[in-house]
Amino acid sequence: MAAAQFAIFTSNADFFGGHRRGQGTVVLSFTGEHTQKVDGKGRMSIPADFRRVLEAGDPEWNPGQSPRMYLLYGDHLKNQVHGYTVDEFNAVVATITALPRGSDRKKKLSRYFIGQSIKLDVDKDGRTVMPIRQRQKLGLKDGDLFFQGMGDYFEIWKAETHRAEVGDEDDAWLEEQGDGFDVLSLLDE
Image (cartoon, rainbow, N blue to C red; front, top):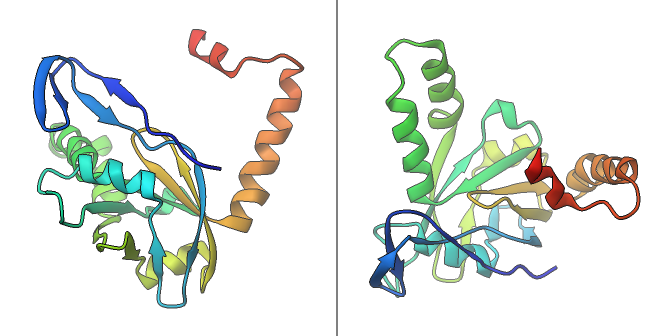
């Protein structure tokens, strides 16, 4: 299924195509679902739509360069890993480091978010290498990966694990909602 990029406007200065205008910042979001291959060496292609978001979210990126990203693989994620832009990752880290020194929340967040993440480079062809430890976490040698856009980050699953865990769970939940259910009604809760 192809993904579409969309913009969210925040209250900072507007950044669009390299020019500032008006109010709000245009932020591309990770959207859609993609199935990509990973080989035995861990090389995987990041979906093209996701690469545009990674480029926009990397403050050191310039046209002709490769974007960077963060891969979060914390134990709390079970059978998935998460991909973040440099900006989004740094924003979360800033929030964590602002917590009171020595607090349990700061320790847990530091351990599971900062401590269990790795910065990766995406090459000119849109590929990166998922390290062996993270591939083992997902039970990957080679095969299909499932990428799910989640707005400010994206999930990466072994495709068959995603179908078994998320697909069945989502199907059961939707069936409980009945015909004509509008998922956007969840925003009203």
